[in-house]
Length: 313
Image (cartoon, rainbow, N blue to C red):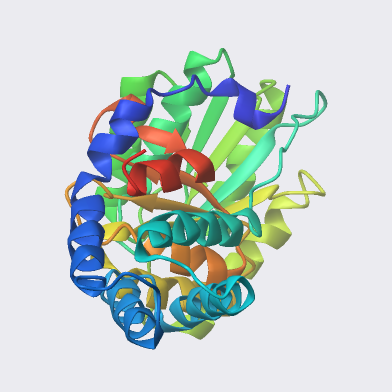
């Protein structure tokens, strides 16, 4: 069974509720964009472009969507404004399909290693805790590594999550070498037959060279224990910050290879459109979305359900 199969399916009502503010914002803007129009023309497309940009989809992704719709309008000769929602939904789903995450089956010989990166305050440690809980619920043996050794609060918070979820946390003294923590975590996990290892890292971007060197060292040291580690580099972003999240994503992508994304705090924000732009521009799949405070409110990202909820279906 692949990793995705370990997570219990969430009711779509949670997703609908979590995206309610984004949906309302987008539809209010769309209604104004087509007001008084019966067909999709240049003015409607200009208005639609503004709707998408102000919904945090991002300029480049917005222009890509507009070009695709222009091609359909040119091909079909006449497209009514009533058809616009359906066409827009199809084009967004198509974009998200280009970066869908792939299954990552567990190996019986070695644990699956997730290296988690992201700036402080985005919900990184909370995401790790929720992931650990969901893996535990699926009967998997989980190990956590507190490699953010520059903040006492980060180590303490991860330890609290470890106790809450019932999984061991490997840590060292404040200021210790993060790579040493990662090494110890993998050694312990391997010796104890763990299925999954999740390692927290420092959330600093003010010194890109230092961050790049630190992450490189962590990876090199981990590979002394497990040659293929890490199996996944998960970047956690705060969706409520809109385009700021996109900028963070670009900066992290510049210093290390990101293989998947977790976008948190989508409930209570109208900036859910950022999911579309970040996935498209980085060519990195969104794997998890955070829709609330509950353990089960971290969901595996389902592009079809996401788009349906966004469009009220």
